[in-house]
Amino acid sequence: METLDHWVSGAAFSGLSTRTAPVYNPAVGTVSREVRLASVADVDTAVQAAKAAFPAWAGASWSKRQGVLFTFRELLNARKLEVAEILTNEHGKVTSDALGEVARGLEVVEFATGIPHLAKGEYSENVSTGVDVYSLLQPLGVVGIISPFNFPAMVPLWFFPIAIAAGNTVILKPSEKDPSAAIWMAKLWKEAGLPDGVFNVVHGDKESVDALLEHPDVASISFVGSTPIAKYIYETAARNGKRVQALGGAKNHMLVLPDADLDLVADSAVNAGFGSAGERCMAIAVIVAVEPVADDLIAKITARVADLTVGDGTRGCDMGPLITKEHRDKVAGYIDIAIADGATVVVDGRGVTADGDAGGFWLGPTLIDRVAVTSDVYLHEIFGPVLSVVRVASYEEGVELINSSRYGNGTAIFTNDGGAARRFQREVQVGMIGINVPIPVPVGYYSFGGWKDSLFGDTKAYGPDAIRFFTRQKAVTSRWLDPSHGGINLGFPQNA
Image 1: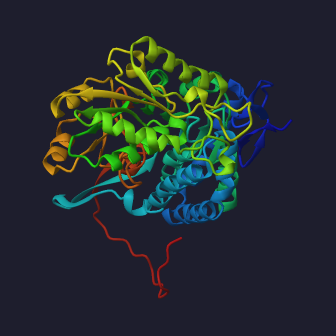
Image 2: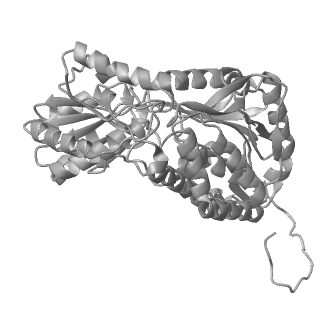
Image 3: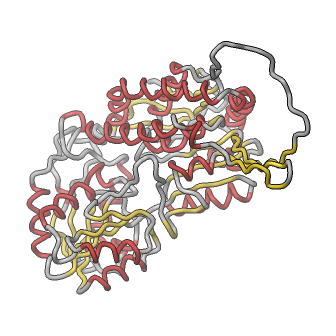
């Protein structure tokens, strides 16, 4: 059976550790390969390679770095079907969803190609007689990225294009559940002309994560995952003197007002609740229905769910399996909790007949009505295809419910009342808001991140926040008494 190696200094690296972990095809339920789990020494090897590559890459001109980014973008766009197939085979998401993931990652690569403009400093002339002041943005050094299983391509692409464009070198620790996309992208970087050692991949579990968090030569950590782990990442890395952005979990609400277009709401709820089998931090988990719309809305959602096909992502199905058997069983357990807590299970995904191998990790779309806000079904991030309905009497009650959540990642309001929408965007305590948009993931030139227990650290992912995160500023106060002469050269000036 194939064993997936690490990637260090532009080549496969087996390391010293003999530990491995299985990588499943979740649509079949069998092991497709194994992945190496790095030791502390293996992580150090990667960090030292990145450290050695840093001076030359940081000293490269903006034009040279920008050229590599452009080439990487063209290669990724031309060969996106290759990586989409990897995502379907290891994560289980259907091909259209996998291609959408790559497309959203490409947005950030395209944003990063504008790095010469984005990382410009400021200049003030003659602040005092003969004295000028200006600022410089310079790279941090070796940066660590720890990414989750649900977006093996997109989430790393949120971070490393900007980190690399700014002159940093990178250690990526992908999820051990679906690690192959990371190696595929590492090879693409090499083909694009990125110098060896600038982009490295180490696989692993907690041992490799802790090694990155504690390594004295790693300047920053970027992380996306569950809230308990995000909090641990933030506290451990910060305690070790690192800059940290740690994006945590979510429990995203969709507030539906009585004037909303219920057909649009039903379509949006199904798409946002069950896409990628609900394994998205931006998935809609709770519909907050302002009465009297709940019954009609539930009927429309139920009709749409009946037409969905669950199965192998390579067969043109609407929704694929969950990532592991353990996770599937955990998500299914919440349906039992809902019943015990007195909720009404309108659609039960545990009995789904899947278009795929019987051993796949299947769980169909599940719709639960009258979920109590004290139930674990409401309080916990389920991270699966379970959509809850909570009924409220007014807009005010709905906003109060959303704001009382420990999470503040994403939310949406569905209404045709512009005044209500404007009021909602001001009053709701959530970092990303959709108005008649169910999954309000910002485009690549804004920044992604929530509030409260959905984000630890001072900066969000990608966009302007990423430029600030992956650089540090110098302020220079300058006085020149004598002009210099550069000689004569009649050739047209060029960047190099």
